[in-house]
Image (cartoon, rainbow, N blue to C red; front, top):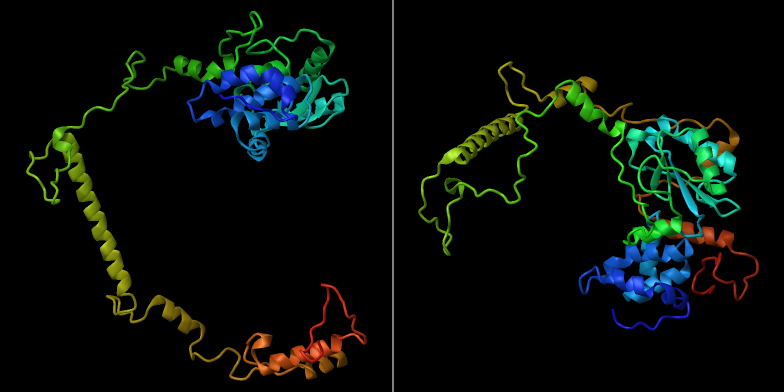
Length: 391
């Protein structure tokens, strides 16, 4: 990374974050530093708790892109906050399974207890509450996380309220799984790609009972994949194809070059597949011919296409429905009768401006709408149409 002259907006953050930003950029190949935008946004949140305008300017100037590009990414992902966030971000899953298991009740209980709603922070700045679409822990539904770490599994409104009270009072809260609870800014430092500096903060927890339930049921009932050997090495490269299964080579003139006769298992499978395709193609041809001859004489003596026969049954004489002349309904009151009598005879269906009659209608309507006095400067709204002489 070359020397950057930071703007006044980015200078305060640059004084604190430039060195870790350089370390983040060094993880990416030369010319690909723009890929560092995501961890840089997390790095910004370690200082301010959200992506501020100063943070957007800092990221843009470090990467040599404009602020609109940074803002497009920062506003797309929910992990980048657009306003100051509390010390602890409490997320409650309210998606399908967690909701069925009581996730909405857990969220509603926290809303009532804390007096804040989604993406809002308590007055003491400790808790920001949010409902999450999915926290990827359906086997522990409903779940509550603190700063993206699993904290309460199979939560209830009571256990969730106890959790937030412990956090607000500074009491130790042991998470159900994962690392020790830290502040949101400390978590952002880890999400930027740096190790947790706290001694013993990272837990070595094992998978819980719900996660292992399927495996244990399979063991109890003797369910296993036939012939599966867990010690079998995983093949990292594709095996070579049998020589007989390779297609014939061609020279520059695209003429087949003599090769060994095809053989082997793969060739046999390919031959069988070709025969199956040909058989299917024959069936398709037969169906097409059958459709092409529809309406012609069949073995049953039927001379008509089914669609023609159905149409004739609905209208045997092929007359115009309702007779050749259909009388218009008589008006039921004087006002309606007067309106019908004043109607112009229907024309040829062209737009109003495409015929003499249309021009007459427009001219008549314009004359009727023209005000008694014409403002010499009427503005751009409601200007009446007129002829060139009138203009």
